[in-house]
Image 1 (spheres, rainbow, N blue to C red):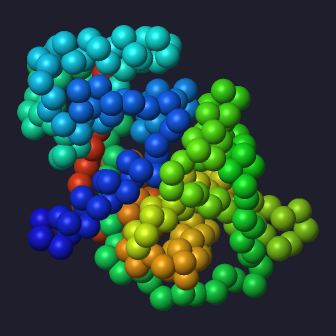
Image 2 (cartoon, rainbow, N blue to C red):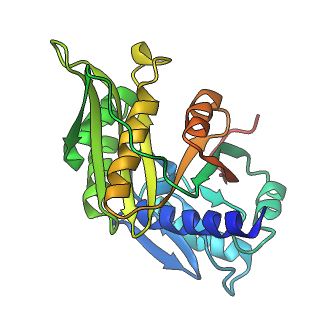
Length: 258
């Protein structure tokens, strides 16, 4: 990885951590644990930011107690920045399966602005309304939707949520998404297109508009996270100029081994 991309990747990791912070988080020996009951694993996992002084098993035991008290399974998010550096090897040796790999993609310069087609309009949504909309589309439970809304409202990095709709009768939903801007860097989150609308360029139109709004507010670079096996979405983001920066995954004893 070239130095400029490596620097942007690190900024994306740090900005993503800030933007996904739930109210229920604390540090244990340098590990940031998050205990939101939301659907997104990034809001209910361990981020191993520092090696700490405890033996790994003791540190995991302390974290496990916190997750058990919150009635949540323990997941460790493993990134190229995780500490100790051999954390992934230790967890694999314990028999903890790897799940939910995701790619972080970055964009060093935001694209020029563009207009929406005449038959489309962008609608701004408050956090609760956005959480309700995307939650129903994804089949989230009421508890998960409430936790999502809580996290968005309490986030130290303000979120802006949007629905892309048809201007025709019925104002059909074409896509939805949100962004969180921290200074000059903006993250795109929860980009979702209803199944009946996929393959029509709606996500591309939406993302262009979100980046355009963020640029007007002062953003000049961007990041996002996408499933490593979501090739269709990756192609959309590549058309916007995003490129692969790094991959992360989760490990958990709560996951059945393949």
